[in-house]
Image: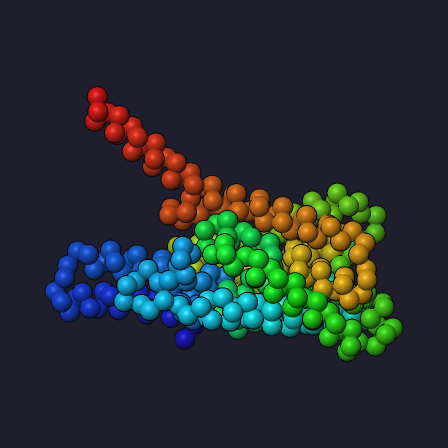
Length: 315
C-alpha cells in the first residue's frame, strides 16, 4: 500500500464510526478535515511527514501523540542516510560519465532523477525525503513543516552530503576522482557567476513548484505520482542547467563534494541560486497556486469580505 493510500484509509475510519452511530451531517465534514491533518510520519505522504505543525501532536484526540523519537530523531537520521546514499550515487555516476566521454549529461540527469524517485518512496514516509535545504525552507514557509525541525534537517542533510562525498573519495580511483573533482559542481565554460545564479534560481523554482503542487499541497498530495513527478523535474533541471550552472538545485548536494575535494570555486552560486529559487516558488505557490486553505490571496479576500460584512451590519 502506498503512503498516500495509507492516509486515505485513516481518513475513512471516522466516517464509518459516525455512520454506524447514525450520525448525519458532521460525518462528511470530519472526514474531509481528516484528509488534511498531519498525524504520524509513518502514514503521511512524502515531503510533509511531520506531526501537527504547531505542537508535534495529532489533531485527532483519538490518535496518540507522535513519539519524539519518530518525529525528531528518526526523521533526521533518515535525511542523513538518504543524503549520504544520494551523494554516493550521483558522485559515482559523475565519475563514470566524466571518464566516458561527451555524452555524460543524459546519464547523470537520469541517474539523479531515478535516485530521487527511489529515495522519496523509501524514506518519504519517515522524514518526507526533503534531501535539500532549499526544499526544507520552502515547505516550512508554505506551512507544511515544523520550523523547529529546520536546523536539524539541514544539519542532517549537510553531514550526510559530507559522508557520502568521503565514501566516494574512498571508492573512486585517484585519476577518476581528480577528473570529476569528486562530483563537485562547476560553472560552465564562459558563464558568469550572475548567469549561473540566475540559471539555478529558475531551475530550482521549477523543481520546488513541482514539489509543492504534487507532494505538499493538501488538494493534490494524495495523488499516486509525486515521486515520479519530482524525479522527472530533477532530470529536466539537470538537462537544462547542467552545462551552464552545474544543475545543482541543492546546496547540500554541492557542499559535501566541495568539502571532500577542496574545490570551492563559485561555491556560493549553489547556495544563493537554489535558496532564491525556492523563495520565488514559495511566493508563487502561496499567492496564486496553493489550495484554498493555504492561498494567501484567498485569505486576504476572505478577511476583507468579513470586515465589509461587519461594517455593513454595524451600519
